Image 1 (cartoon, rainbow, N blue to C red):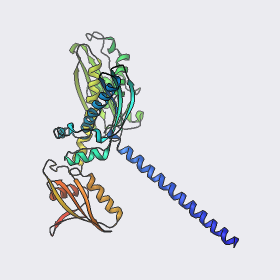
Image 2 (image 1 turned 30 degrees about the horizontal axis):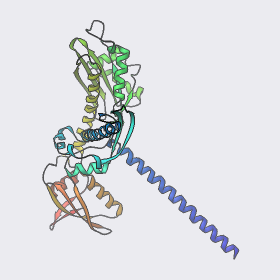
Image 3 (image 1 turned 120 degrees about the vertical axis):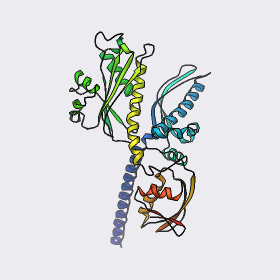
Image 4 (image 1 turned 180 degrees about the horizontal axis):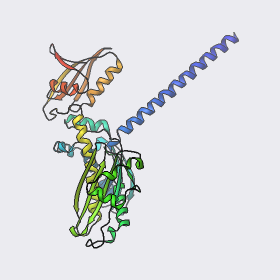
Length: 384
């Protein structure tokens, strides 16, 4: 009797151990999935965003600053995700109340005088809600991050006799200012994440000058110095005689090699402002290059997403639960698909109702790029 009780106890112990191991393994998998989701959704955070407002009290000033910052950060997010060629479609969305789309607001730094609130905040938005909003409005968007690119913020001080120079334009102060401006941007959460690095020893003043003039040969050996072939130089060169700052972006990003130059005017002796503008524009250029190629390759590229929404009834066939989940995810991630509802479902089929710009034929074209076949037969759209 005691032996049987002992054997039973050992059996129960094994069951509990196996159950514990299963739970632990499931927790690890869930944690990994959550981490992956967090990583892929980081573009929905607008970090280090400056806010500044005044009111009758410190509390009122903070409320006003956060409310204004929330709206402006939401607009910044939309411009981050949507290709420049589609910005006109944001006119209606820009006035949408961003409050339901906010996940959290975190304070990086703040200053609270009596009637003023000045701070830098991180606005994290809810990815699924923002995606759904853009899809319902048939606005194309890109939220896949590019592989990281190393960015070198290099500065070339004007030479002797260059004109009306200032102390800020010296090599040491100008380099520190240019690097700090890039450091203050939200580089990690951007569609094209940038890792700020110092200039490698091989990047002499002569080499930087050659690159600024369009000679990219000095960049050939930088992959070893930085451990990646994706290196972009942002070279700032003040031109006091012309009252301009000339900025060159040159190197290789996630899209390929490029060389661009722009000039920014210095207003009222404010040397920092054109540098700040140049950095913001520079980041936008790199981000825009990535959005352009991803938008062309995105599901539904070439589909007129501004066409009227039309209802589509779909009958889906699949081999098992895993395949069904994959098909459902593809549908939900296809730009333009809205109002997706699942009707009757069995182990091998399901009925769906949704809306898509241009109806079933346009949806068929969009899904074909993702390996799914949507055909109209016997009065029904069949998806497999």
